Length: 358
Image (cartoon, rainbow, N blue to C red; front, side):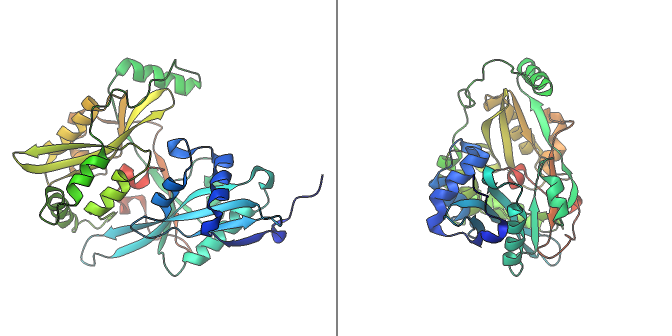
């Protein structure tokens, strides 16, 4: 058996469009089918080419025989800080990373990461992600700081099924046959709803709701995503295969709240991942109605979401039946392209959609 090429014998270069078929094969071989079960060119184009924050920079490692043996992409993201300056913070998030099983342990992951950090140093002020327990030590060695855990709030919809699923997950054993996650979901699709409302112009109900929300949030100095109709359409309406649904509440003809989420399989459980809750400033009643409707209409065993402190949804959580789940949440890690990140966990106002892996 011939020796494998050392990293010095590999070619490290920017990702090219012609690499896409081999890249998808490599991601599938290393990471399986991803959030939709199958890695497709359409999903890649939506995520990495049509992102309103910009196309994703990427690097690949190529063996002497032309095979792709490593890939690394950074998803572009944009945070906005409220307060007097109202500054934009350009960011990237490491995603879709794979090394061919025959080439693991040879420094490819680190080399691709370092090269991409150099590539984005003049464009991005922040690098952030939510590594799992296996990958976090490697990120620490490359300069990432662990900022803390972003908590998850849960409401059990089918208490008996939810309890069985939790016990099975803790015991790492099967919990019986899994139901299709969308068979009982009565919520309309986000794709259809957003397609009808994003084109309504600046005087449309959605644009008005987002404009009022943005004006109120301008005083909040935490980092948050500026939600525009176009961003919501890309993130939730155009995502191939992710089946986002929409919930709305009205007061008369006025749209007072909007929530977006998706039914998904979470081990033995059917989970409704509530990604975004947007209401008019101070409207805790609409927030509570959306939170209750997510449980009532999703058809899932439970609802999971993140409710950022100080938001209307967080204030309404307890009376809507949501509790912080122990031993859950995502670890937030960050750095700048050139050094430590000047932020703490308290510097962000997240929705779950900002951190959801997709």
